[in-house]
Length: 428
Image (cartoon, rainbow, N blue to C red; front, side, top):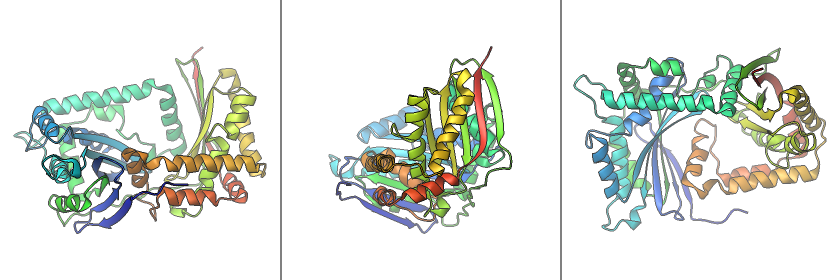
């Protein structure tokens, strides 16, 4: 059962077309205010957009250097301003967030929410530009260097690299296959002129969503936001493609300096958040299949058959795809592949016990129960539903999970069609 709280969730569209959401929760002593700027993913623009949240959160015209901005944040009881880049299906999400103390704890009764919102919005609409109207060279080069280091770190994380490669194989030319920061080559060749052009486009055409969470004052944030974004904005459409599986399974094998091979199977389900009534069953099926230590993949492929170091499934609601990731010895790659597919076939045949289904439901409900224990989890939960036909709370999702039947799980398993197989092997 979910604990009863005084949480209040409210959503609306402001006069300037900005989506506004507040999740008030007095359990926290802090608040978080985020502006999410969303645009379609594209190879030509991903790098320029991906750098902007970090450039914009460095300074603004009122606090033109990092030291002055840091001093102001310290005055606001140790507040912080941060950038982040993520993906929602075929959409690139550029986020700048301000976090700080709740208004009611301010010693002088000042409105911290208004101050944080003003700092946040002014950093987006009024950044520091040089005499040529460009972002300062030093800050630009520093952020470019850090982005390249981040991309290199992802390359060195072989499990993450394998996932990226599997998604590229599975998705092909679909925008979701593009990295959230763009490619290394596009970041290296990026110019300040391109970044400024991308920034100007965002101000007028990005889908904007403002989230305020925690022990917050939504009315104050909403009023301040309206002062910064014009009413004549023209937001771009942000569709996400959901495709069926191809006729033939796509396969790719790479050799790298690794001791543990990676095997990833990519499935198309054809079911995404747009068919919201079907997604609880797909999520439950993925949990039964490989989502917990009580799942088929963990208990059978990993434990009983000892074919994998790890083996788990994950379902992407926005794209309607399911990945099974595993780490295996090279001699066990084909055995593991067959075993994984066999476990899926067992579910398709209805060989699911009530105990398995009960464990899966308990696991999912417990996970949903903890979503709102952290502001970051709460924000991710609601942000992930930005382009869904409806918005639900974790409590509502938990109730839907409890209602999923064995027959629905079987039907969901039958909708999973293998579409891509990626293998990373060690060099001889």
